Image 1 (spheres, helix red, strand yellow):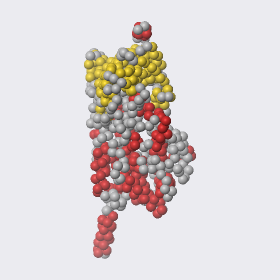
Image 2 (cartoon, rainbow, N blue to C red):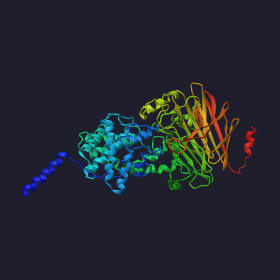
Image 3 (cartoon, rainbow, N blue to C red):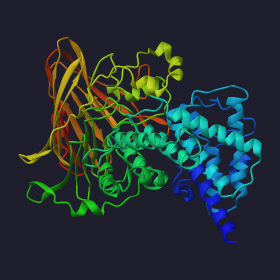
Image 4 (cartoon, helix red, strand yellow):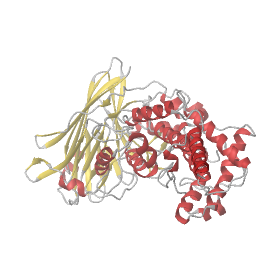
Length: 589
């Protein structure tokens, strides 16, 4: 009997040794580990109406699917389709109800994707896009985990397809230069590879060298995601919120297993968030940000020592200039709140616009000067516009929209934008060097604040900007421009969509209910013009806060010719019932 027990123990030990079952295989996969995103509405709605995203009407999910479909001419929609977003709701509701049949039902889409690509030998633009591949790898890890734990019953034919797809994804994610190491896509690719190798450990490619590669490369990418101040580096406040939420709640296990404890960094990043919101809690529209509402507390700002420019005139300064942002704002809950947000971030072109040294202004509790914001991921003429300097409160050159990358497409070739990938776009020549930040430290001086920055636009001109700001009173913008060639420089002011603007000579006047402003161009030989909702060329548009939705807004432009010259705006603000004699005096000038 003793010999039999010894033989049984030896047999079990031998099998365990041969299969090399790692201890982490016994770990559960949780809802916060595999980047699940709930669709609009519940599973019942998806079954009756189809695949629903926040931007488009339902699309039928009748199998077999056309995984290369693009019914809305939207690259983001294609991306969502090929990340298997339709199965997320099944998995989320499984975690809520523990109904294992939901996992089995969701596999019909996985099998259909397999057959589309490996039986019918078809493909789409997002079949093997780096981020989509990483997200699918997380789902495959979940399915293999469910099979190992006998949570679901899967026949051999489907099981082979699942493991075949797992092998394909592992191989793809290890190919050299398959995923970007310069933006956040690599995080999703490596998180997927890590989880999939953790579950599908029999694959010879999931060896110690792969684990070393994952850890080393993940850290390399992750270290570039945030500055020392804790600011996300992709020139886009919306992605600051998105990436911190993802790391905290969407891919929690793979991040912790690869990097260990990153709580200190995430705590630092959380503290940055209130600075990225205007007093009405609308997000700054820098880069590919849409100006969405984020209902977070400003309490952490109340403990910050204010900077005073006069007695009883004290304000909070978010001097994040090492990262590329400068913020001056009133203390939260102050009457008639003010906030100036200046950007000069240049770490990464991933979601960046040509908005260097641009600004947004909030006065008397409302927006005055805004940024155009984001549009959609389609490379069409509107996206080309919103990326350009002409769409921001900075300097552009007439008839030469400056993009953060030179896309090398004309409007006549607009249809070709749909064939470009994001990687192809960012591989083009940059118009500015990604040196980190173009801003200097904020100064409180002579009863005003100073924000100073400088940017060199290769082969065009250099721009040195000084912004002098007295909250609620005055904004002065001085641009010193140098070039070896003659240009028609254009300095733009984008007003909030509801503000009515009137031009008179070199003056712009605006009335916005609880206040008014007078903007005057002080430089000689400059011509003022105004546009709103212009279509050819595109000018005077702003994002509503929703993906792909734009509305007309007024932009005032000062066009000033020359090689080396200075352009100065002086803008004064007046509360309602202030002495309005300035209007008559200025109009008589």
